[in-house]
Amino acid sequence: MLPAAKKYLDQYAEPLIHQTAAQRSECFAGAPTAYTHVLVIPSYNESTAFVRRLTTQIFDSCKKLLVIVVINQPKERHRSSTRLNQRLWDFCHSSLQGASHKKGIYSLTTRSSKQCDFLCVDQFSEGISSKQGVGYARKLGCDIAVDLIAKGYLSENWLHCTDADATLPNDYFSAPSINKHYSALNYGFTHSFAKVHKSQHQKTTEAASLLYESSIRYYCKGLTYAGSPYAFTTLGSAIAIQPNYYCLVRGFPKRAGGEDFYLLNKLAKLAPIFTMPQTIQLKPRASLRVPFGTGPAVCALLKNNKLTDFNPWVFKHLKEWLEFSPKLHSHITDVSNSPLASLSHATQQALSDIKVQALLEHIGKQSKNSAQTERMIMDWFDGFKTLKFIHALTHNNYPKMGLAELQKNKSFNALFSNTL
Image (cartoon, rainbow, N blue to C red; front, top):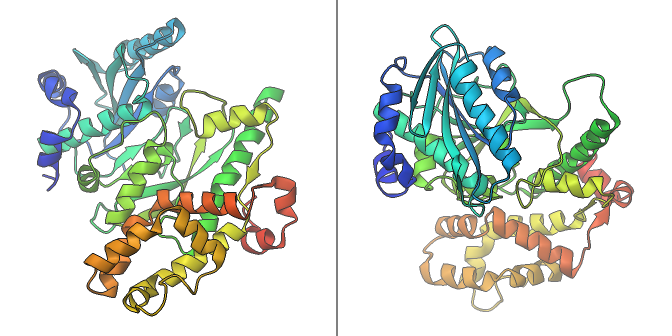
């Protein structure tokens, strides 16, 4: 039993977990002993292609896989979405080779001679809040997985999360043994179509996706250069979560976008994020399913909106602050000087803009030693504050630059020559 699972399931799991417990138990009455791995996929307006793909794939280091597919759509539904979602539900229940167990919102298809079984969760018939969107779908799927671990149907292993447009490598489940040293796994990713012959639209979409992907890598590499403990990519399709830490941070935030960023931001405060060597292939596509992220960014690029990115100097100022912060405790106790006086004006201004004074006052009142101060800085200056700090520098001193301008920039080439 996970140490944090009981409190989480009792107090913070989705109410639906308790309301449909009997339905779930009836479905799993005929399930195999324990599943060794789990994969959670939110699905909205998707075809059956990703399920077909998973049924034919053989994963290394995986004895028996349970794929939890949360089929969802907003309450303000469109008929086309309803038809696709219903088709996916019917396909998983009736067209997969195996025994189907259907009860209420659940449809479990067990395939004794195959590597993976499928549990579909109906969140499209009634619909979900558009404000909670994919965050709710991921949370519900992972909450179900935690409950299955607690009941012994699933081994205590990573909560793997991906999306319907992802093609996973065969060694995807060759992950480190579950342990307390890492709170999550972060996989590599790339956007590309599997087929050799592509239409002009596919080529254009792929190019736009790769351009946005390079921007994500650039930002992550900038954080790495600066020494940030939050230097990792945050794609919900390319992460796995240690289940006990998942419970401790109370699961995925229920929001229509950014749920992956905010979850990893919380997890990184408890234990490091481990970067995996495997690469997930994501299908390039323009989409407005979420308010921001890859899909909307690709849509904007396809409309000839030029990509602009952060001036490299913002990462130099971030590095200045992060290298100074371990010394902050001694500077705060020195009443003869301002604690931040030795920092450059641009760095001081950006810190002021993100209300660093509140941190300084908290440290002054609560911290007894430098170790406590560093912990307070780590918690306060998290991934979100880091982004706000960089935006402040961008607004005050270093406007964003176009791609062509960046490629001519000496600082960019010196620090990020392999990024774009």
